[in-house]
Image (cartoon, rainbow, N blue to C red; front, side, top):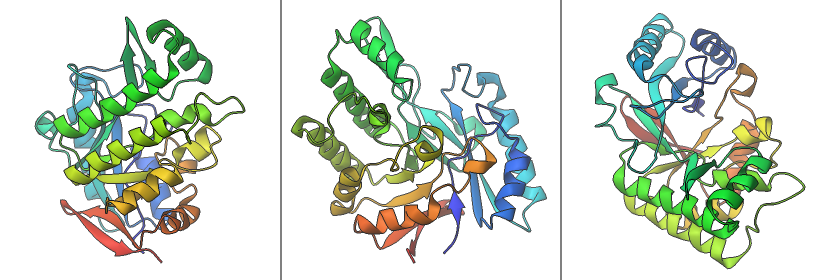
Length: 280
């Protein structure tokens, strides 16, 4: 199989290794294709996003490295672009000045009354945020997360959707925020899967939470992934690496995880388009 990863963070945002260090590691790990995807909320930024005035420098640097190592590995330039309603949106039009090869659309921020929660924040912070900004209504906060995701799918234009049920990170510990088996939650998953199917967006199976937050399975959950397969939604495998150690974490298990959901093929991005390969 062609070994790929398109969800990679370097020191340009909140990653711990330089882009060149990551490329050298990817070559050692026999990757065929590597894509960089710095966190972005262009034209704004935060302390863990690519600074708004550094997008061109980032894109130019990745393209320079792509030329330098072109005889050893294919390198692509992307962004993990946040969607915040009325603030920023993952679309090729919005990022046209930087000519990205691909975009990952993601939801991290879930606004409520006079504030927001971060879907992948600490359990305590998310719980406090729900109490403060959603009047303690956990269901309302989780439903808003998925509503924003569907809004992003409708309004944006991007290649992959990032960690589509990121909010379930809050169930990774001994204390769970909500019950993923309840019908209201399954309804949100189904509605989001239908939106992805209609838009023809490729979903990443994201293994990053296994290394960084002690999760037992990737995003999306088995139920979500099986639902996506039933609707013929294509998937790819990404690590959401923030260190070189995470570059291909849980990849072999990830292929089996995807097959178990019923998939026989997996997608990869090359030369401007998505292509499929059989999962072996």
